[in-house]
Amino acid sequence: MMDRSKARAALERDLRRHRDAPTIAPRSGWIRAIRDALGMSTNELARRVGLSKGRISQIERGEHERSLTLNTLERVAAALDCRVEYTLVPHRPLDDMVWEQARAKAAAEIAAVDHTMALEDQRPGAESIRQRIDEAARRYVDKRGLWS
Image (cartoon, rainbow, N blue to C red):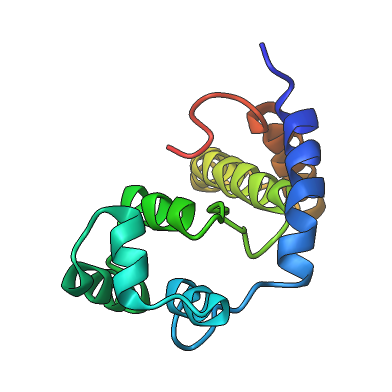
C-alpha cells in the first residue's frame, strides 16, 4: 500500500510553486496571446490544426469562456508548438486538509459518544475531549472512508 503521507509531501513540493506564484492567463486567452505573439493568423492556425478559421475563433472564445475541452486545447497547443500543463492547486496544504477532515470525523464520533455519556451525567472535560479527538483523528488519517 502506498504511503499517503509521503505521496502528499511529494505532491505538495510540486504544488508549492503553483500556490506561491499562480499563473494568470492573458485577457485574450493563451491561444490568442501565443498566436498573436508568433504573428500567426487565425487562418494559419486553422490550417495547422486542420480546422476552419471559424472553428479557431470558436475555440479562442471557448478558452475565454472556459468551455474548451482539454482534448481540443491539446490539439491547438501542439499546432502552436506548445504543451498543456493542467494543474489542480489546492488552496491549502494537503496535510492540513486531511487532518482537518480527520479531526471533523473524529469530533463527530466523539460527540455521539459524549451525548450518551451526558445523558448519564458522565460528560468528560474539554481537555479529555480534545485528546480523544486527536487520538481518533490519528486513526482516520490515510484510511479509506476518511471523506465519506
